[in-house]
Length: 187
Length: 119
Image (cartoon, each protein chain N blue to C red):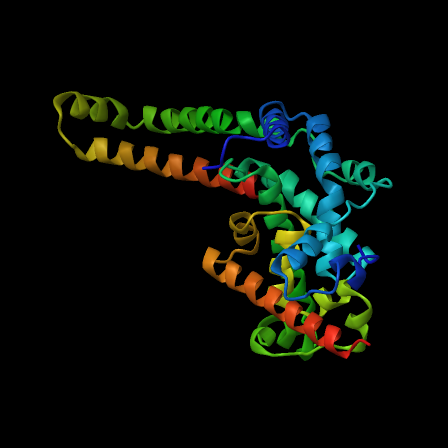
Protein backbone atom coordinates (compact mmCIF):
# COMPACT_ATOMS: atom_id res chain seq x y z
CA UNK A 1 0.00 0.00 0.00
CA UNK A 2 1.19 3.48 -0.73
CA UNK A 3 2.59 5.87 1.85
CA UNK A 4 0.43 8.74 3.09
CA UNK A 5 -0.84 10.48 0.00
CA UNK A 6 0.79 13.62 -1.28
CA UNK A 7 -1.66 16.33 -2.37
CA UNK A 8 -1.02 15.71 -6.06
CA UNK A 9 -1.77 12.02 -5.75
CA UNK A 10 -4.83 12.74 -3.63
CA UNK A 11 -6.18 14.99 -6.37
CA UNK A 12 -5.45 12.34 -8.99
CA UNK A 13 -7.37 9.76 -6.98
CA UNK A 14 -10.31 12.10 -6.55
CA UNK A 15 -10.42 12.67 -10.29
CA UNK A 16 -10.25 8.93 -10.96
CA UNK A 17 -13.12 8.37 -8.55
CA UNK A 18 -15.19 11.05 -10.26
CA UNK A 19 -14.62 9.52 -13.66
CA UNK A 20 -15.56 6.06 -12.44
CA UNK A 21 -18.57 7.13 -10.39
CA UNK A 22 -20.13 9.67 -12.69
CA UNK A 23 -18.54 9.14 -16.09
CA UNK A 24 -17.54 12.79 -15.99
CA UNK A 25 -15.42 13.48 -19.06
CA UNK A 26 -14.19 16.77 -17.58
CA UNK A 27 -12.58 14.88 -14.71
CA UNK A 28 -10.79 12.66 -17.19
CA UNK A 29 -9.68 15.72 -19.11
CA UNK A 30 -8.16 17.14 -15.95
CA UNK A 31 -6.24 13.91 -15.42
CA UNK A 32 -5.12 14.04 -19.02
CA UNK A 33 -3.94 17.66 -18.80
CA UNK A 34 -2.13 17.02 -15.52
CA UNK A 35 -0.14 14.08 -16.84
CA UNK A 36 0.22 14.36 -20.61
CA UNK A 37 3.39 16.46 -20.37
CA UNK A 38 5.48 13.98 -18.44
CA UNK A 39 4.08 10.92 -20.17
CA UNK A 40 4.96 12.43 -23.55
CA UNK A 41 8.39 13.40 -22.22
CA UNK A 42 8.90 9.85 -20.93
CA UNK A 43 7.97 8.38 -24.31
CA UNK A 44 10.14 10.86 -26.22
CA UNK A 45 13.09 9.89 -24.09
CA UNK A 46 12.36 6.18 -24.56
CA UNK A 47 12.14 6.79 -28.31
CA UNK A 48 15.34 8.85 -28.47
CA UNK A 49 13.51 12.10 -29.14
CA UNK A 50 11.12 10.91 -31.84
CA UNK A 51 8.33 13.35 -30.98
CA UNK A 52 5.87 12.18 -33.62
CA UNK A 53 6.02 8.54 -32.63
CA UNK A 54 6.04 9.46 -28.95
CA UNK A 55 2.83 11.46 -29.35
CA UNK A 56 1.25 8.63 -31.28
CA UNK A 57 2.05 6.27 -28.44
CA UNK A 58 0.93 8.85 -25.87
CA UNK A 59 -2.42 8.98 -27.58
CA UNK A 60 -2.68 5.20 -27.31
CA UNK A 61 -1.68 5.43 -23.64
CA UNK A 62 -4.47 7.84 -22.77
CA UNK A 63 -7.07 6.02 -24.85
CA UNK A 64 -6.11 2.87 -23.01
CA UNK A 65 -6.25 4.80 -19.75
CA UNK A 66 -9.82 5.77 -20.59
CA UNK A 67 -10.74 2.15 -21.22
CA UNK A 68 -8.92 0.70 -18.24
CA UNK A 69 -9.16 3.39 -15.61
CA UNK A 70 -11.25 1.13 -13.41
CA UNK A 71 -8.29 -1.22 -13.18
CA UNK A 72 -6.43 1.35 -11.10
CA UNK A 73 -6.59 -0.11 -7.59
CA UNK A 74 -4.78 2.67 -5.77
CA UNK A 75 -1.90 0.43 -4.73
CA UNK A 76 0.65 2.82 -6.22
CA UNK A 77 0.65 6.53 -6.94
CA UNK A 78 -1.55 7.24 -9.92
CA UNK A 79 1.39 8.81 -11.76
CA UNK A 80 3.47 5.66 -11.22
CA UNK A 81 0.64 3.49 -12.53
CA UNK A 82 0.32 5.74 -15.56
CA UNK A 83 4.05 5.63 -16.28
CA UNK A 84 3.80 1.87 -16.08
CA UNK A 85 0.97 1.91 -18.61
CA UNK A 86 3.04 4.14 -20.92
CA UNK A 87 6.05 1.88 -20.58
CA UNK A 88 3.90 -1.14 -21.43
CA UNK A 89 2.57 0.59 -24.55
CA UNK A 90 6.16 1.46 -25.51
CA UNK A 91 7.30 -2.16 -25.13
CA UNK A 92 4.34 -3.41 -27.16
CA UNK A 93 5.12 -0.97 -29.95
CA UNK A 94 8.70 -2.17 -30.05
CA UNK A 95 7.60 -5.77 -30.32
CA UNK A 96 5.19 -4.91 -33.12
CA UNK A 97 7.70 -2.85 -35.05
CA UNK A 98 10.32 -5.63 -34.98
CA UNK A 99 13.29 -3.35 -34.59
CA UNK A 100 16.61 -4.08 -36.32
CA UNK A 101 18.96 -6.53 -34.67
CA UNK A 102 21.29 -3.97 -33.13
CA UNK A 103 18.36 -2.35 -31.37
CA UNK A 104 17.40 -5.68 -29.84
CA UNK A 105 20.96 -6.29 -28.85
CA UNK A 106 20.91 -2.89 -27.23
CA UNK A 107 17.78 -3.88 -25.36
CA UNK A 108 18.87 -7.12 -23.88
CA UNK A 109 22.49 -7.86 -24.37
CA UNK A 110 24.58 -4.84 -23.68
CA UNK A 111 24.23 -4.71 -19.93
CA UNK A 112 27.60 -6.29 -19.38
CA UNK A 113 29.39 -4.62 -22.27
CA UNK A 114 31.78 -1.76 -21.79
CA UNK A 115 30.92 0.56 -24.63
CA UNK A 116 33.53 3.07 -23.63
CA UNK A 117 33.40 6.78 -24.14
CA UNK A 118 32.77 8.34 -27.50
CA UNK A 119 33.74 11.81 -28.67
CA UNK A 120 30.11 12.81 -28.44
CA UNK A 121 29.75 12.05 -24.77
CA UNK A 122 32.78 14.15 -24.04
CA UNK A 123 30.67 17.06 -25.17
CA UNK A 124 27.44 16.24 -23.52
CA UNK A 125 26.60 14.12 -20.53
CA UNK A 126 23.11 13.66 -21.82
CA UNK A 127 24.59 11.76 -24.70
CA UNK A 128 26.49 9.66 -22.20
CA UNK A 129 23.16 8.67 -20.74
CA UNK A 130 21.91 7.86 -24.22
CA UNK A 131 24.86 5.53 -24.77
CA UNK A 132 24.14 3.45 -21.70
CA UNK A 133 22.76 -0.04 -22.31
CA UNK A 134 19.04 0.19 -22.53
CA UNK A 135 18.11 -1.38 -19.16
CA UNK A 136 20.51 0.92 -17.33
CA UNK A 137 19.45 3.97 -19.28
CA UNK A 138 15.79 3.31 -18.71
CA UNK A 139 16.31 2.60 -15.02
CA UNK A 140 18.24 5.84 -14.58
CA UNK A 141 15.72 7.72 -16.68
CA UNK A 142 12.81 6.66 -14.50
CA UNK A 143 14.68 7.27 -11.25
CA UNK A 144 16.62 10.42 -12.04
CA UNK A 145 14.70 12.12 -14.81
CA UNK A 146 11.15 11.25 -13.78
CA UNK A 147 11.99 11.45 -10.10
CA UNK A 148 10.56 8.05 -9.18
CA UNK A 149 11.79 6.08 -6.21
CA UNK A 150 13.54 2.78 -6.85
CA UNK A 151 10.37 0.96 -5.83
CA UNK A 152 8.24 3.01 -8.21
CA UNK A 153 10.68 2.64 -11.10
CA UNK A 154 10.72 -1.12 -10.51
CA UNK A 155 6.92 -1.12 -10.71
CA UNK A 156 6.95 0.93 -13.91
CA UNK A 157 9.48 -1.32 -15.61
CA UNK A 158 8.05 -4.53 -14.20
CA UNK A 159 11.36 -5.53 -12.65
CA UNK A 160 12.25 -6.93 -9.25
CA UNK A 161 13.51 -4.17 -6.99
CA UNK A 162 16.97 -5.74 -6.74
CA UNK A 163 17.32 -5.90 -10.52
CA UNK A 164 16.30 -2.28 -10.87
CA UNK A 165 18.81 -1.23 -8.25
CA UNK A 166 21.51 -3.21 -10.05
CA UNK A 167 20.72 -1.44 -13.32
CA UNK A 168 20.89 1.94 -11.61
CA UNK A 169 24.15 1.10 -9.89
CA UNK A 170 25.75 -0.30 -13.04
CA UNK A 171 24.60 2.69 -15.04
CA UNK A 172 26.12 5.06 -12.54
CA UNK A 173 29.35 3.11 -12.47
CA UNK A 174 29.57 3.21 -16.23
CA UNK A 175 28.89 6.94 -16.30
CA UNK A 176 31.55 7.53 -13.68
CA UNK A 177 34.01 5.42 -15.59
CA UNK A 178 33.39 7.30 -18.84
CA UNK A 179 33.61 10.61 -17.08
CA UNK A 180 36.88 9.55 -15.49
CA UNK A 181 38.19 8.71 -18.97
CA UNK A 182 37.00 12.07 -20.17
CA UNK A 183 38.77 13.80 -17.29
CA UNK A 184 42.01 11.97 -18.01
CA UNK A 185 41.97 12.73 -21.73
CA UNK A 186 40.95 16.35 -21.39
CA UNK A 187 43.83 18.81 -21.24
CA UNK B 1 18.19 18.90 -20.36
CA UNK B 2 20.41 18.76 -23.36
CA UNK B 3 22.10 21.92 -22.16
CA UNK B 4 23.44 19.97 -19.25
CA UNK B 5 26.99 19.25 -20.13
CA UNK B 6 30.05 18.22 -18.30
CA UNK B 7 30.45 21.62 -16.73
CA UNK B 8 27.34 21.09 -14.63
CA UNK B 9 28.98 18.19 -12.85
CA UNK B 10 31.14 20.67 -11.02
CA UNK B 11 34.88 20.60 -10.77
CA UNK B 12 35.28 17.48 -12.88
CA UNK B 13 35.22 14.95 -10.14
CA UNK B 14 33.50 12.02 -11.71
CA UNK B 15 34.49 9.79 -8.83
CA UNK B 16 32.31 11.82 -6.60
CA UNK B 17 29.03 9.94 -6.21
CA UNK B 18 27.31 13.03 -4.89
CA UNK B 19 28.35 15.04 -7.94
CA UNK B 20 26.96 12.42 -10.29
CA UNK B 21 23.75 12.19 -8.28
CA UNK B 22 23.44 15.97 -8.36
CA UNK B 23 23.83 15.98 -12.11
CA UNK B 24 21.31 13.20 -12.54
CA UNK B 25 18.91 15.07 -10.28
CA UNK B 26 19.20 18.08 -12.57
CA UNK B 27 18.48 15.88 -15.55
CA UNK B 28 14.74 15.83 -14.75
CA UNK B 29 12.53 15.69 -17.79
CA UNK B 30 10.67 18.85 -18.72
CA UNK B 31 6.98 18.18 -19.35
CA UNK B 32 6.06 18.55 -23.00
CA UNK B 33 3.74 21.55 -23.56
CA UNK B 34 0.17 20.50 -24.27
CA UNK B 35 -0.19 22.36 -27.61
CA UNK B 36 -3.64 20.97 -28.27
CA UNK B 37 -2.78 17.37 -27.46
CA UNK B 38 -5.40 17.06 -24.71
CA UNK B 39 -8.17 18.74 -26.67
CA UNK B 40 -7.55 16.50 -29.68
CA UNK B 41 -7.52 13.41 -27.53
CA UNK B 42 -10.75 14.35 -25.77
CA UNK B 43 -12.36 14.63 -29.19
CA UNK B 44 -11.30 11.12 -30.04
CA UNK B 45 -12.46 9.38 -26.85
CA UNK B 46 -14.54 6.46 -28.07
CA UNK B 47 -17.49 6.81 -25.71
CA UNK B 48 -17.66 9.57 -23.12
CA UNK B 49 -20.68 7.98 -21.38
CA UNK B 50 -19.00 4.66 -21.01
CA UNK B 51 -18.46 4.58 -17.26
CA UNK B 52 -21.92 5.85 -16.40
CA UNK B 53 -23.54 3.10 -18.43
CA UNK B 54 -21.14 0.47 -17.30
CA UNK B 55 -21.94 1.07 -13.66
CA UNK B 56 -25.53 -0.03 -14.39
CA UNK B 57 -24.61 -2.88 -16.73
CA UNK B 58 -24.44 -5.62 -14.07
CA UNK B 59 -27.86 -4.61 -12.72
CA UNK B 60 -29.44 -4.64 -16.15
CA UNK B 61 -27.72 -7.91 -16.97
CA UNK B 62 -28.79 -9.61 -13.76
CA UNK B 63 -32.35 -8.34 -14.06
CA UNK B 64 -32.71 -9.38 -17.67
CA UNK B 65 -31.06 -12.74 -17.12
CA UNK B 66 -33.10 -13.44 -13.99
CA UNK B 67 -36.32 -12.59 -15.80
CA UNK B 68 -35.45 -14.90 -18.67
CA UNK B 69 -34.53 -17.68 -16.28
CA UNK B 70 -37.79 -17.46 -14.36
CA UNK B 71 -39.76 -17.27 -17.62
CA UNK B 72 -38.05 -20.36 -18.99
CA UNK B 73 -38.40 -22.38 -15.82
CA UNK B 74 -41.92 -21.31 -14.90
CA UNK B 75 -43.61 -23.56 -17.44
CA UNK B 76 -41.52 -26.62 -16.61
CA UNK B 77 -42.53 -27.05 -13.02
CA UNK B 78 -38.86 -27.15 -12.10
CA UNK B 79 -38.95 -24.00 -10.05
CA UNK B 80 -41.54 -25.21 -7.48
CA UNK B 81 -39.77 -28.57 -7.26
CA UNK B 82 -36.43 -26.87 -6.74
CA UNK B 83 -37.88 -24.58 -4.08
CA UNK B 84 -39.43 -27.57 -2.33
CA UNK B 85 -36.15 -29.45 -2.46
CA UNK B 86 -34.29 -26.43 -1.16
CA UNK B 87 -36.77 -25.96 1.67
CA UNK B 88 -36.31 -29.61 2.64
CA UNK B 89 -32.54 -29.24 2.51
CA UNK B 90 -32.24 -31.82 -0.28
CA UNK B 91 -30.23 -31.46 -3.44
CA UNK B 92 -32.93 -32.74 -5.76
CA UNK B 93 -32.38 -33.00 -9.54
CA UNK B 94 -34.68 -30.01 -10.00
CA UNK B 95 -32.66 -27.95 -7.55
CA UNK B 96 -29.48 -29.05 -9.32
CA UNK B 97 -30.82 -27.92 -12.67
CA UNK B 98 -31.90 -24.55 -11.27
CA UNK B 99 -28.56 -24.04 -9.54
CA UNK B 100 -26.73 -24.92 -12.78
CA UNK B 101 -28.86 -22.36 -14.62
CA UNK B 102 -28.10 -19.72 -11.99
CA UNK B 103 -24.37 -20.46 -12.16
CA UNK B 104 -24.45 -20.37 -15.96
CA UNK B 105 -26.29 -17.08 -15.90
CA UNK B 106 -23.81 -15.62 -13.41
CA UNK B 107 -20.89 -16.74 -15.56
CA UNK B 108 -22.50 -15.25 -18.65
CA UNK B 109 -23.19 -11.90 -17.01
CA UNK B 110 -19.70 -11.83 -15.50
CA UNK B 111 -18.18 -12.53 -18.90
CA UNK B 112 -20.21 -9.79 -20.47
CA UNK B 113 -19.23 -7.27 -17.79
CA UNK B 114 -15.60 -8.34 -18.12
CA UNK B 115 -15.71 -7.92 -21.90
CA UNK B 116 -17.20 -4.44 -21.41
CA UNK B 117 -14.43 -3.58 -18.99
CA UNK B 118 -11.73 -4.66 -21.41
CA UNK B 119 -13.33 -2.48 -24.07
